[in-house]
Image 1: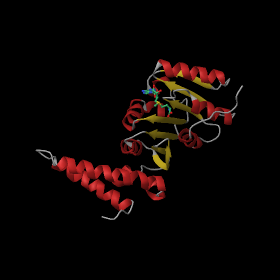
Image 2: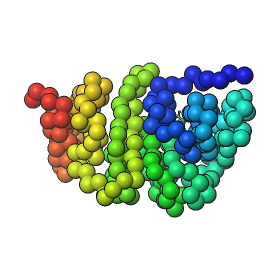
Image 3: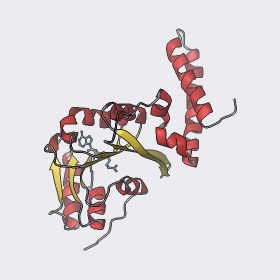
Image 4: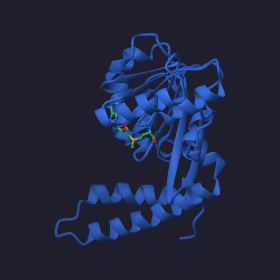
Length: 234
Ligand SMILES: C[S@@+](CC[C@H](N)C(=O)[O-])C[C@H]1O[C@@H](n2cnc3c(N)ncnc32)[C@H](O)[C@@H]1O
């Protein structure tokens, strides 16, 4: 039997934020690679792999069986956090979905988050939506990573239940409070690209028969933020 899994760097980074001995759920687990990787590396970890679709659910069941982890990873079929009992987990991983979907999964299952100390999320887009939800629901963004794999740039957000409510500015919600400070090369690359997209969208919107001026002003403001944050010349 194999004792390691060849996990993507994106999921390895997400997994690295789980402390030893975590009891966690991986929602939208697909093949359950992440929980298997964690449980193979940490004999004290336990996991629940949640899947809404039959295909990925069966794949997850098979992977868990292949690695002989049935005693420590429970694979469950169902929507979002509905598959969990209250207080069952202390950490939550949710990766590879849109930010709005992750937000809605958290929103419809807030009662299952009472004992969750840390949420590790990797939204494929709309990170701002997710940061807004997290900080409005007693979670503080304590770390963030940005990385590139197979031509895609991914953001990983780590939010913990600590202290008072974190009040983030609109700018910090957009760029990520930690990513903004770290200013990694990939961060600069992402926002350079986004800046070009903003410019193009603004130009196209201006050409409309009835331009949506409010939206143009809003996009212009955000485009100026990008220039400021990554120190782009005008
Ligand atoms: C693109 S895959 C990501 C898999 C893995 N988490 C990763 O990051 O590589 C998204 C998975 O989430 C599952 N999913 C989508 N909506 C879900 C929901 N509401 N509850 C549970 N799983 C969901 C899909 O079936 C799919 O397997």
